[in-house]
Amino acid sequence: MHEVTEIILRGIVAFVFLILLGPMIGKQLISQNGYLPFIGAITLGSVAGNLIFNIKIRFGYFLLSMAVFSTIILAFSYIAMKSSHTRKWVNGEPRVLIEKGKILENQLKKSLYTQDMLEQGLRKKDVFDLNEVEYAILETDGSLSVIKKAPTAP
Image (cartoon, rainbow, N blue to C red; front, side):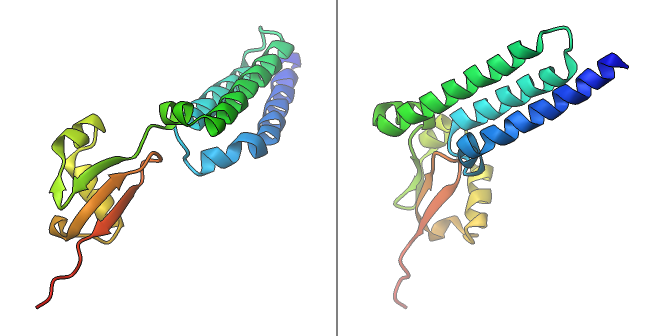
C-alpha cells in the first residue's frame, strides 16, 4: 500500500508542478509557436509521467529535472525573443509555396509539404480552386496565409 500512496502523491505533485509551469510556458504551447514549446511539452510530460510511476528514482531528482528543463525552456525562449537569428533558428522562417499563382515545387519539398496538404490548407481558407491564389505562405506555426488574385473585369 505504501507504493500506491507514493504514486498518488507523486501524481498530485507532478500535476501541481505542471499547473504552476503552465502560465510561464503554456501560452506558447497554445499558440503553436514553434518547435521549442512542443519539445518542452513532450519532455515535461515524460518527466511528469516518470515522476508518477518510477518510484525507484528519488523524488527530488524528478523535481530538479523538471525545474532545470523548465528553466532551459524559459531561457531559450527569452534568448529567441531577443535575438532574431536565434528566433529564426528555433521557429524557422515563413516559406512561400505559391508565388504569382504558380506552385513552387522546390519550396513544397523543402517544407515536407505535399500538394494535398497545400490544397487542404487552402480549403480551410475557403479557397477551392488553385487558380484563385496569387500567394500562399506557410507560416512558422504551420498555418497557411493566402492572398487571392484580384478579380478580373468582365
